[in-house]
Structure formats: C-alpha cells, structure tokens
Amino acid sequence: MALADFIEQLDKLAASATAAFDAAGETAALEEARVEFLGAKKGQFKAVQKKMGSVEPGERPQAGKRLNEVKMQIEQAFVAAQERLGSQGTGGQKGGQKGPAKQFDATLPGSCLRWGHLHPITQTIEELKGIMGRLGFSVADGPEIEDERHNFEALNIPLEHPARDPLDNFYLPVVGAGGGALLLRSQTSTVQIRVMENTPPPIRIISLGRVYRPDTPDPTHYPMFHQMEGLLIDNRVTMADLKSVLRMFATSYLGSDVHIRFRPSFFPFTEPSVEADFSWNDQWIEFGGAGMVDPNVLQEVGYDPEQVTGFAFGLGIERLCMRRHNITDIRYLYKNDVRFLHQF
Ligand code: PHE
Image 1 (cartoon, helix red, strand yellow):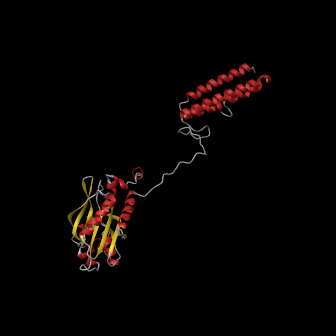
Image 2: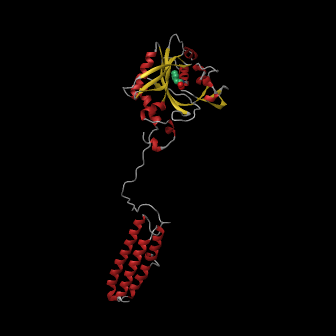
Image 3: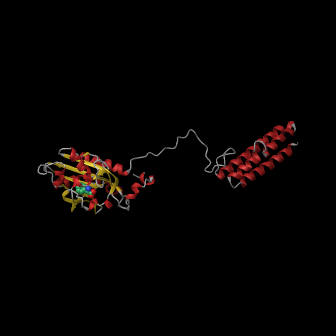
C-alpha cells in the first residue's frame, strides 16, 4: 500500500471518529462510537493499523508516526466528548455513570464526617444542672411510670380533682405491684415525694426529666416534654428564698437584664402558689409554677410542718431552650431533622 493512501485513510478515520464523538448526545451513544472506532478487536482504527504491514518497509516509520498522531487525536476527541457529557468511565462500566468527570486521587485527604452533638434539650438540661449545682442543688431522679400516690395523692391531689381525669393523663392498661393504677407521670413533682420519703431534711434537689400529657401537638404543646423540678426544705425557708433562687437562676440562664415576677396561682401541693414569669425583650413569659410546700405534703412524707418549711418549683425545659435559641415551634425539637438539630 502506498504511503499516501495509508495516510488518506488515517485522515478520513480521524475526521469520522471526531465527528462521531462530537455528535454523541449521551453516554451510551459515545460508548457505541468508542467501540466502533477505538474498539480493541473490531474498531476501525485497529483495521487501519493492520494495513500498516502492507506499506513499503522504507515508508513505515513515517506511516507509524502518522498512525500515532491520529490515534492521539481520536483519543483526545473521545476524552473531550466524555468530559462534555460528564461521564466518568470507559467501556468497562455498566450503563455509563453520570456525574462530573473525576480522576480518583488517592493522595487527597478523605472527606470528613460531620461530628454529631447532644440534642438541644439535652444541652439545656446539662446547663441547668450546672447553674443549679452552683446554687447547691444536687440532682435526683425518678421513674417516668408512676403510681397514683406519687403523681397525685401524696401531692395533695384528691381523687375527685380534675387533674386526675383519665382524659388528661396517660394511664397504662396494667396495674402496679400493689394493684393500683399506673400512669406516665404528668409532672416531675413526683420526685419531690420520692426524695422526701427517703431522706430526712434538709433537702436541696432538682430533678429534670420527661413528663407526659395528652395534648394535641401545636407550636407550644407536645404530649411529651421536660420539666425541671426544684425542692428546698430546711428551717425557716421563706418565699423570699424562693424568689432569690429563681432570680439567680433566671439571670444565670438568660442574662443579667432578666427580671422575674410572681403571679398568684394555685397548686394543691404548694401554699401559697405562684406562676413564675421571666421578662424577655419587654415581654413577660411564664416559665412554670412554684410555691411553699403545703404542710399536708410535708406531713404525708413524715416531716413535721412545725419544724421545717420549704419551697418547690417546676419549670418547662422546652420553654427555656426555645427562648434561648429563638425556636418558635416545639415540634421542631422532636422531628429528628438534622438540618434543624445541627444548628445548635
Ligand atoms: N408540677 C406543676 C406543674 O406541672 C409545677 C409546680 C411544681 C408548681 C412545683 C409548684 C411547685 O404544673
């Protein structure tokens, strides 16, 4: 074969291969064109390459040089088409993968895993423990499944009290060891009783945990939420002590410009009883209830109301957390959406 003919065939091949690669509109078509022109066995390039043997031996070096040039040209056209289509693989890969063309570089650092962290409510609980710990309160715990004695009776809530309505509580369909009803506790005040039953005064504890009430979820209600209960029992404890402790707590948690206010209220287990409000951005927000422990409760746990007095409070932990972080809907806290949670 004459050198000129060989070169002409090579040039034609280069032109049609380049045109085919350029025309490929998707990975599958490009792959087809690759097999057609660059295929190792039946590709057109291979076919022309085989003809080199028939070129005059003296002209073969020139033919070989041109062959290599054309090969590079065709391969470059293929790579360009591959990049244009954003495909990564060549022949071997199934279905031609989509995605940016990327070379794997084993020397680059790996992609980092994002560290998890504590849930915002858990973070708040830890912070509250820290603040109250510095005020001398230690942490007590109690069960979430309670009997009626600890959730109601010892707290001076008699059977006919509306708070015991089955529609306002999660009663369980099983009975306790003593045959009495069981329910998911509706307040952490249960822990006041459990601690006083087992410990002589003085007492200075907080208890933080879940409580349950059959509320329909909305921006400010959820059937499960958290409370921080506080209980201080000693000689000559007064309302002034209660207010001082809550003020110190409020300024530690929310800032020195926070004020607190008491509004008269009623709880069966405190007398007198108050609602505790904190001011925030010129707005008063209710954070929970408080009061002096009712003498009936002290008597119930075997204390002498003539000897000891005390105060108790119960604050909503979600409210504290939501105020701090400007969270406007309690339901966000329990959706388990990391896009929300990772902000805290
Ligand atoms: N247990 C009350 C509630 O859940 C709050 C409270 C606690 C009030 C302690 C007074 C004293 O609403």
